[in-house]
Image 1 (cartoon, rainbow, N blue to C red):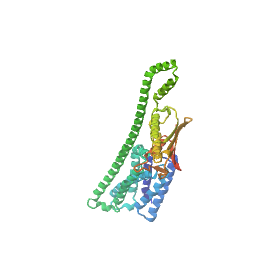
Image 2: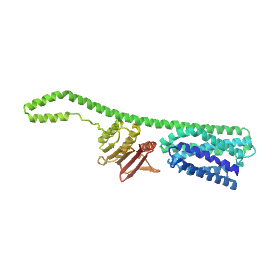
Image 3: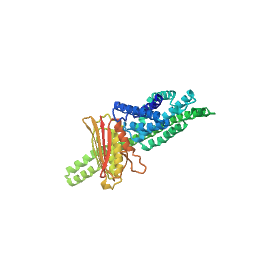
Image 4: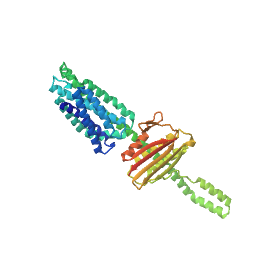
Length: 433
């Protein structure tokens, strides 16, 4: 019974490693999560050991069922969707499967006449030691780099695509595990066992590293594209301002001649021509298309860009901006949230007839303690939702805009909520300052 109990203590390193990348996604206070998972793990370990000892069920079967039960206890403590938590948990389970087989190999050396069903202390203690060592080794890289993926990768399909690799590794380790250790001493089976096991561990490590670098490359490319888009908007507004300044300089240069003409018309009391001349002069004055919504230069450029875009596509855009010049939220993040809101709203409006296109956006701070971004826009009423999240309804759309807004808000310990009703889509962002 003691050996069975020790063998299932491997559940503890499994749950610990699975929690590393979730450091920014706690549903409850860390102390409560620790208590929840600790109690769940303890009950599961005692139950698995009792079932194994009392009924003699297959140890692999008990282990797999235990992992499935452990996942449900694990998932409910974090705010991430199922695709993320399940992907991480399967990744950890695949590693634990490799560790269990390494422990079998060690047990086979120590007790060559026994088998996996023997539940020896050598196997249980060595497995637990390897699990604890893996938890210590993986703490820094998984906490630091894994949390980046959890926080910023919001493409459900990519998370689900990682699961088959973990399942294959887990299944391969299940099939590789010897029932009787004596079979390992037949011909070159022991050498093949360790070779396959080493290759499996190497593949697990390489896939983990490759996945991180591929995803961070995608995320960095998306950020670069977003920043370039903002720079293009600023360049467009700069050129518009430059054109206005050049035309204003021309008017100032010619103003002396205008004064002379006006004086001449007044002296001759030719008031009809004076009125006509003033009307022509007023029409020739350059118009400044750039509107100053707030003191933030980058945000002004962004809002002017979308104002011009809305005018071009006959979208009624109502902007109410009341923001201080300086805020803890970076210009890139602020423009990213508002830009994605206006981008998604504009795309939705274009699916309606011109007379039904409208967007209302308000951005303000309350007592310099909270930033509120509230938007409402018309749309055709068609939505695509899964697990409470909205996805793009366009053919090749991914829904990255809304996910980016939510991720940015959560990075500042804020919230982003989306809803719809009767042809209106609502966005509510609250960020503590």
